[in-house]
Image (cartoon, rainbow, N blue to C red; front, side, top):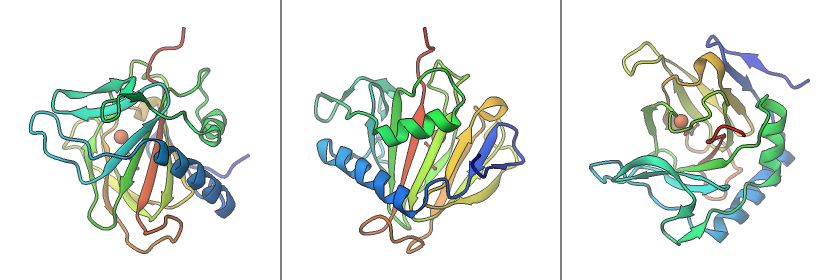
Length: 209
Ligand code: SIN
Ligand code: FE2
């Protein structure tokens, strides 16, 4: 059995160091290969069109997109007109081990954070029909300060760190909790060339048949 930590939030489980150094390097190589096929882009906020402080890309049959028209899932990368690259098998293995769900993920959202300027405001992952499936988050590179709140934006929240190789499962009673990334700690890891943090979130979007 993997070492896991039940957090104070029912349905949120942290697996510290799920990937060891060689596991992190292997996953990074697979992710960077996918990112050479399609170039990460800067998403824009709904309505205002303001650019985010991170870059994004997707792997899998569906990609999560933030556009002036709103948030949602798309089969094609609008920037290239092509499908998203496939989800690396190493990530499908992680899902199979921790998601406890009878179907594979359909989306891997890749969030690329520069340290120290990128952050992600509190939000809920609610664009998926399969809300019975967890979101599985894998972190590579610099450590971040991750914040988890309640079910309304102003609810009490608390933060903890996510380091390279950590896996976090957000599911069950906490599937719709607010969460976000306060900041990324520069120089906290040497894994990613040039520094920064890569977060991979695996999502089941449609209800399995
Ligand atoms: C997300 O909520 O989509 C990303 C979380 C993270 O970067 O850890
Ligand atoms: Fe999220």
